[in-house]
Image (cartoon, rainbow, N blue to C red; front, side):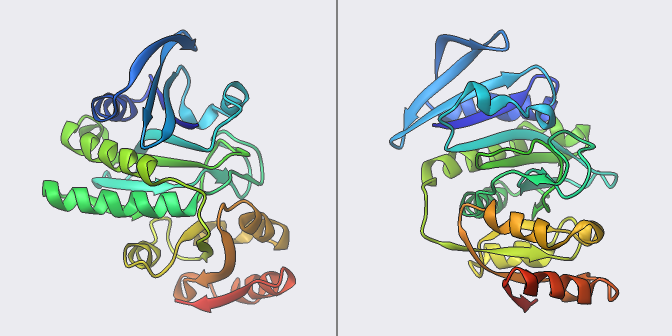
Length: 274
């Protein structure tokens, strides 16, 4: 089962969910979750459910306890940034350090690399077709929840103006529907991304160009938290078999480079420099 979830506290998530309900032949069921109806659909040979959360999505650590057969969990969410730049983004949840925004300390969710890549490409294509001035980007892994099921966030941001943009919300909805239609357990291999900014343009371009399927991505600011154990978790908690790491070499501080390379050697993970 594929589960879509959004928070009633989230304007962008609510707008995206409304658009999703128009794209899929959902039916309102007698089943409820957190006092709200559960919507269900069978499309593309897949069972899809959509639920509303009372609290913010980052704090939904126990959500899979109520839906034990989740194959993929997609959060429909707002994106916030100080720049306020219009952005459509996708990322995996999890914490490299403390659990300041939900989840568990030093615990990652399982990353659906291919589904993330497919969503990124769909966001880019629909953005171009709609001719709207939004960036499309990967974000590095951050915030909760920390789940034992494949999970990703598809987001609309980065300010209240964009959260209420129904045209952009429709693009996110279309990309989500495509991700659902294409989702399957795949024999594709994946890569671990290390270094660079939170919005890594190089990794995004590589994915859009079919050069790599990225799983977890570790930004420059999180590198002091990374050790062999965390790198191994990045590998183990990716749906695809991670064959190597791609290093944003200029985006890794010189004082961190020897330590990161040594950690990669300790877990026997090959790497290339981008």
